[in-house]
View 1 (cartoon, rainbow, N blue to C red):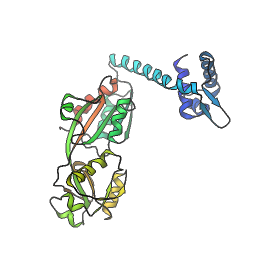
View 2 (cartoon, one colour):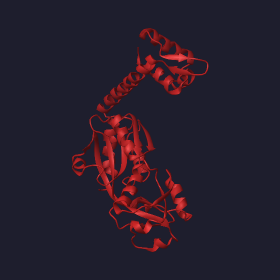
View 3 (cartoon, one colour):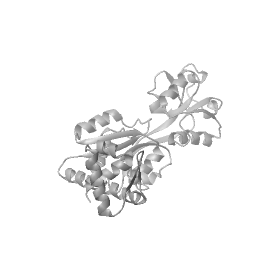
View 4 (cartoon, rainbow, N blue to C red):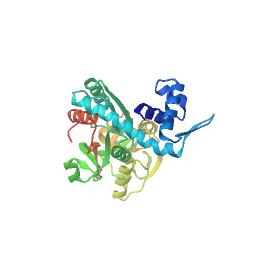
Length: 302
């Protein structure tokens, strides 16, 4: 049994095809099939059920797959740690971030990261803060930029730099602000209460997201009910609805100030929000260690 055979098994499981797995691994299908058959003979079990239409894992294959993945990850980590000891940062860095991130200019940060660590492969995607916490804990993400309501993390835990199995660094603090059409009657106010917005049609994030929970919590604390007419994952679409006079929203004030063509009005109620960087507390990869040090240089003061 060798690592290449494990790569083939993982490739077949993930693509559902010997042909696609062979293409992914840059080998001809016959060579891949031969190696998988040899592995099955060595194990004494069949890993895949093959048919003309699909390839499926057997029960033995399902049991084998997570361990094959773990072995491949361990081999990659060993390679990356050896390179780091020699002064090189290699491997893959998986970054998660919220769409309203303001603590760092992410494109500039990623450009600097690529310049400093040219052998590092970067992957970045937008996600939900609460989901990203779990993904960092399970190793699906290496680092993540979060936006969370004040009190989500205990203050003493943040000060110590560890929260529920992850390392955490506070990057900045902000408040929510109302975002309205520039011609909206309320747009001329210096400040708004949440009660002033109660009759407005709101555009907001999906209800399971951390961003939505922040505005929901603000209205709940104020004892005000509101109508969320549009549940959207796209801030650009939210902005278009506001520009057309169809909705208002609450967004972090620093982010809202970047949106063109809209009015941004502070709200009177307390709506403290924090942005954090988190990463694996116990065993961060060399890439994660290098990236978090870089963020310390580029992040705005808390």
